[in-house]
Length: 205
Image (cartoon, rainbow, N blue to C red; front, side):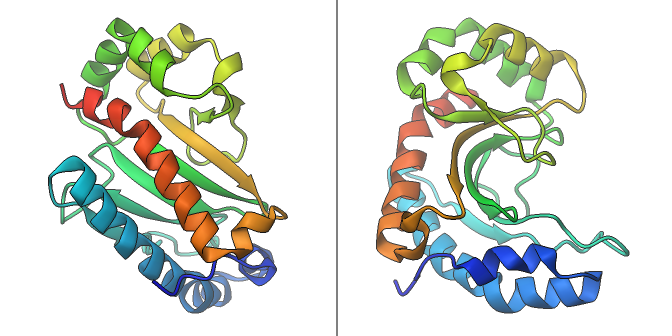
């Protein structure tokens, strides 16, 4: 793998004005890195889970006017799409990289998954480190530390609110040196996904 990490220029992509101009920069600067990193991670997850996992790279095709504030790769067990399935994500905002196990609002079995998580809260507590972060809306940059989260309240909101989401993982700030070391960043992302595998598997029970 020749993945070299993410640079200051990659983050500056989100300061470019204009949909076409920013999308060109995303396609030229970031998506080749996503393809390199994501292909390896998809192979890793396929081996770890014992099933084929597929790489998807966000194309932002629905955007007609406003340029995207972030971009990402997703890995799911479905070749055709990822939004309707639990999936793994790596992506960038202008000030951080996010590494997620993602359950977003398009997920048809969201309510059932939430009930499973509510019933097995101890499994989540046992496997999710306190310093990991949680987002309840993938469109927002902010996240709350798992150790400080009201877990039951968050899970009930995920269950009961149609647009509510649950994303668990890490934020890596844009000035963190690990981002410019491709091998170290890859290892950190892989370790994060491995840590979250029991939660992914629990969602399918």
